[in-house]
Amino acid sequence: MQVRNTASPPVVASRISHARGRLTAEDFQKILAVMDHLGLPVMDDDFDEQQLSARVRDLTLQRGGHSLHYVLPTAIGKVIFTDTITDGELVTAVTERARAEGAR
Image (cartoon, rainbow, N blue to C red):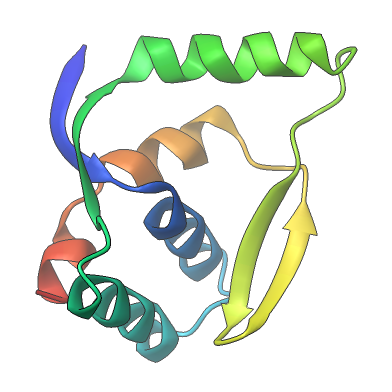
């Protein structure tokens, strides 16, 4: 399944953190606005859900079966580390467009 116009990695982390209630909507919008203002990519051109799942699975195997570590913003300038991101959270955050478009 090929999906176009998907979120870049910093946006994905911010979306997951916001969905988990760790990042406020205001800070999430600030992150998107600053990235856009600086000309940083907010959206990637192409995304393949199966490739993402396969890559995460491969990286997990390379780590001896240990989960990947993710950095999630909790406020401007503050982050937490987690290894409990599900495939569903990751795919949803990558493919969700509505919030990212609202910052433009």
